[in-house]
Amino acid sequence: MTFDEDHSLPPEAAEPTAAPQAAEAPHESPAPARRVLPEDLRVPWGWVDLLLFVLISIFGTLALGVALVIGFHLLGASREQAQKFLGERTSISVLLQIALDFALLGFLAAHVRLRFHAPFWRTIGWRPLDTGRRTRGWTVLVLILAGLVLDVVVSLASAVSPPKQALPIETLFRDPRTALLFMLVAVVVAPVIEETIFRGYIYPVVARSWGVPAGVVVTGLLFGGLHAPQLWGGWAQIAALVIVGIALTLVRATTRTVVASFIVHTSYNSFQVLAILIGTHGLRHFPPMH
Image (cartoon, rainbow, N blue to C red):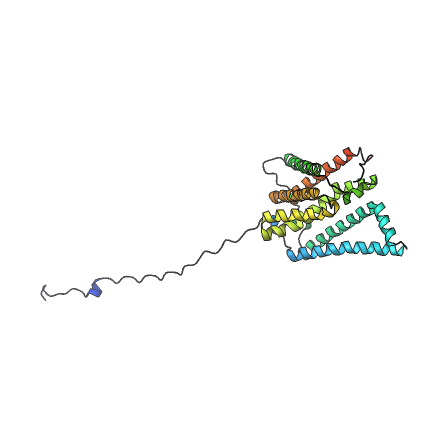
């Protein structure tokens, strides 16, 4: 064998074959990040439950009316006599409203505990107030002052645009005892019931579905709408209460607890009652009706 002979390897053997490239994985778009709701919006009820609550509220109101009609009929009173009796004794209307409010609160408590097997107060938003770096006393004081600011806003709205006719709510102040009962309800009962229903039960569902800003506005509108029959004819007063409802819901959304909006609500109502007591000299001198 001579060195002149070509003993080189064939080209395909001389050069190592390139490793087959790994097949590229098909391009996959990243999965969208799952929206994580804050704890205060993770409630077990939804729109169907809200609809059921509205229907029960309407049915309860109608049932009370029917019961009154039947009661007066059994007593032999005519429709006109019944209307006159209720008009003169408006305290009965206040007591009936209290009974209806507590019945609705009882329904919500049973609904949450029996259907969802959850603790009522915490689930519906009455969580401990998170004060952060501030002391609890300072936080409560700020919330109380917020109620005072709301009272000033509503008072200014009434002064700038006073109603041109008597408001339905003014009938409650014809009698000092009825007025006192109404004011006690406004301070002691109403904030608990209304905050539980609006900021605890309604707001989380709306905010979870449409976003927090929409939840704040819609809940505020519903709150003002609930009080509209009492203030019918006083459009500035109704608009002011819508602002109050939005402000209360904003407090609830910011602090994530109904406790905060409850404190502001109680403060607002208390300053309203204080203004009435001062203006009437302790319920002794009521201004003339419009």
